[in-house]
Every structure is written in structure tokens, then in C-alpha cells.
Image 1: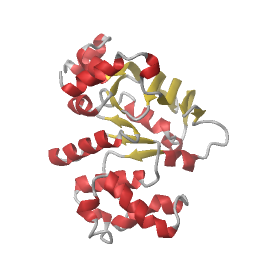
Image 2: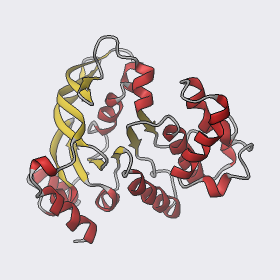
Image 3: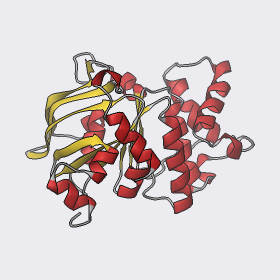
Length: 270
């Protein structure tokens, strides 16, 4: 067991009052694509300022669940849900919910880097400008801060007027992270953010995620169980649309409570 896993296991043993408080509270959430049910009665609490990894075989509902948190699934026709998802105690489905504001608070980084066809600077400045988060004279400071948080500033500070697409794949993904951070979200959702990257770029993204959890709540979907063990404080195992197990990462990987979790982690399926 690594020192990091041992530390997380010790934290799980703390009295409830001393554990990180949840920022996302999911209550009996189910989801359908037309007549096909994709999620079944998901209930969990996602702790604040921690990394929560969602693992499980392809097609088990991880990404559907992730996209439910900031209602990206609303963009898909003929979907519906039951249950609720609360962000800071407020339902994301409540009447009058400002979807733009929700997606500013809950940023998203996708599987493949998707920089806008704009300069590096304008990619990061886009959100603050569109959302009126900063006066134009303050935008450069916000752009620099976001690029520094994404560990990209030193690599691009002399290239800010170049296209974002001119960067390497790993740099583009960090640019997309900076673009999300420029909106100063509370939560950062990441859908397999390293699956299209080489090992060196993957390592940099993982280091960045661990650094960012000091300020943000991060939920990451990953098929890489070693990655989950390295960077996640908490892990949820999804299987056939159900949340089979959720807990401290060290506990899930070393003492899983469900035999299906153990079978997946040990490679017997998936």
C-alpha cells in the first residue's frame, strides 16, 4: 500500500464530523435514453475538495452520470430522469435553474482536447468574457491565473496569440482545463481526460489534478484503475448502470465490500 493510500484510509476512519463535507448530494437518481434505462437509483455524496474517481466497464453509466451533474444530458433528445442531484444543497433540476450559471459552477473537461479555433489567450478568456466575470482590463490577469493553475503558463506565456490548436495534445488538454478554471468553478468534471494522451502528458495531468484538489472538487471518469489508485481520494464502481460500491479509494482497492468490485479490480472482467 502506498503512503497516499494509507493516508486516505486513515482519513476514512475519522469521525463523520471531521470528514470533508459533500458538495454534491445524489439522491436516488435514475436516467433514461428514451425507453432505455441507463442509470438505476444512484445515491452518493461527493466530498468537497477531493478527487472522486468513477470506474467500471465501458457502457456502465459513468459518463452519463457525470454529464447529469451539470445537465449536459439535457442536450440529448428524449431523455428523462427521476431522483435528484443537489449542488451545495440546491437541486440542479430546480425550477428557474440558470443552466449557464450551473455549467460555470460545474466545469467540464472532455475525453479529447477540444480547444476553440481561437488564440491561446482567447480560449481562456472566452468564459469570463461571455459570462461577464471580469472587466476587459482584468481579463489578462484572469487568463494568466488560470494558465498558471493549469501548469501551462511557463510554456505558453510567449505564445498567447498563437492558435490553441498549435499546442501538443497534452498542452491542449491543459489549455481546456485552464479554460474551465477561468470561470472559477466549484466543481471540475473530467471525462477520461488522459485517454488520448501519451504517458508523459498523462503524468502531468495527474500531477495537476492532485494539485487542483486543494481548491476544487474534482470528479473524474477513468478506465485506468492504476490512475484512480494514484490520484483519487474516493472511488465509485459502476456496473450495468448501478453504483455497486463507493468509498475511500484505499478501502475500495484493498478491501472491496462487493465481490463484483473485487472481480473488476482484479481483472476477472471488464
